[in-house]
Length: 67
Image (cartoon, rainbow, N blue to C red; front, side, top):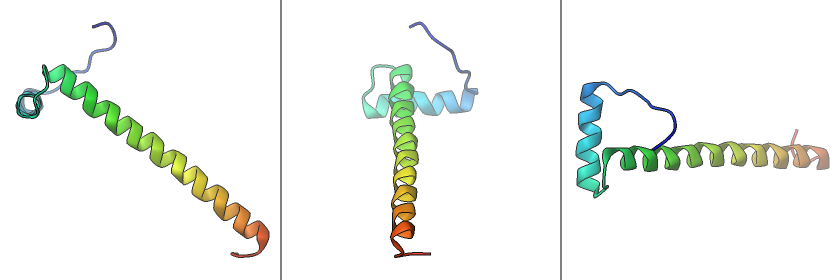
């Protein structure tokens, strides 16, 4: 698989292997990729939601509903 490599300490790698096997992933790499994809999506979604909330607050201030 082309791309960047990330080093994990032995203790964490062992936990990753255990989790991957327990959750039914075909490899620890597949587990890590899936976990990172979910977390990245969550964080980016949260940022987008924060932007939306700020836009709503800005509009409410403009309408005089909040200070």
